[in-house]
Amino acid sequence: GNSVTQMEGPVTLSEEAFLTINCTYTATGYPSLFWYVQYPGEGLQLLLKATKADDKGSNKGFEATYRKETTSFHLEKGSVQVSDSAVYFCALSERDDKIIFGKGTRLHILP
Amino acid sequence: DGGITQSPKYLFRKEGQNVTLSCEQNLNHDAMYWYRQDPGQGLRLIYYSQIVNDFQKGDIAEGYSVSREKKESFPLTVTSAQKNPTAFYLCASSPWGGTYTDTQYFGPGTRLTVL
Image (tube, rainbow over all chains, first blue to last red; front, side, top):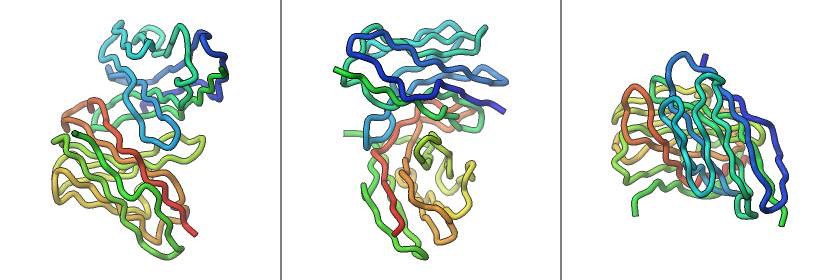
């Protein structure tokens, strides 16, 4: 079945460092891909998405490119801030109105 | 303001009691979902509903029940049959119930603790 695998955390970086959180997927069709962010004690918020191969989603300085050849959707940011500390979830959509989420990657940014 | 509300934010229950978690949305979305979140396990789908008066089991439906009598409301009941109910519960909705789901919008969550 379809699945999402993302790098385990926690990931700890200093402020202004470059961020990459890896995400790979397995899907039988052509899913949409998402990154969601969860701040402490809150629900998830959509960060960005891409609906077809080679699309790049971007928001708040974060970017991710839908790579069908490598079945990947890695999240990147050029210069992280303390306020980016959160849990990040990679996800894909599939038929039957469901989204499959990865297990999440906790990010700590040190001042 | 449009959005999803969940109440209460914190809920305590004694063992053996049923408890109902509220989820309301004013986004006019067709589909609604309930997830359970445990540390280190990501989100697991409990139930989802594409239209009023219809719902489907997700991956971990045992010990839970839902209803969808109105488009804007999708309450979740955690029954005494759920063996380990302490968790963070998240409700979500999405714009349409077609073949592929679009973006899901999440509520702030309810943290349930069984005493």
